[in-house]
Image (cartoon, rainbow, N blue to C red; front, top):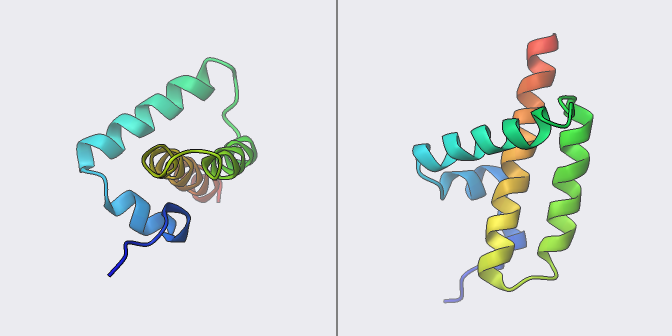
Length: 86
């Protein structure tokens, strides 16, 4: 039985692979990365997540998985930002 390709996982599956401490660290890094640049809008996070997802296809499987997990975390944070607005 073969393991699915990294791009075949859903965001929930990608994030479930991470330990809670790893997810918290990703959230912190995303906040620092985008907060310093003033990029705190959900739309910008969705756009960056798309870039990371596209670039993941150019990487080896381990790097692709990490990039897709980062993209999933970005989308989750963006969704949380939108929910907080409403």
